[in-house]
Length: 70
Image (spheres, rainbow, N blue to C red):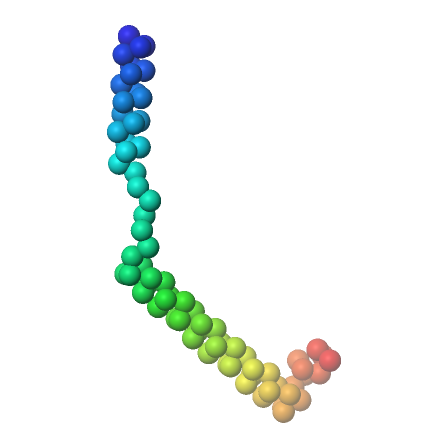
């Protein structure tokens, strides 16, 4: 009984292994990755500009938080 199960196990494993293939990088995936990357870059730039302006505003106002940092 165990030899029969052993044969079935290895046959099933071989069939599944034949079905596997390396996934290709398609044009659709490339475009999707490019869009995601551009969105992240734009969001980073917006956030960075906002924080820079906020820091400049704090310097001009001589706020207490800026004085404590120095």
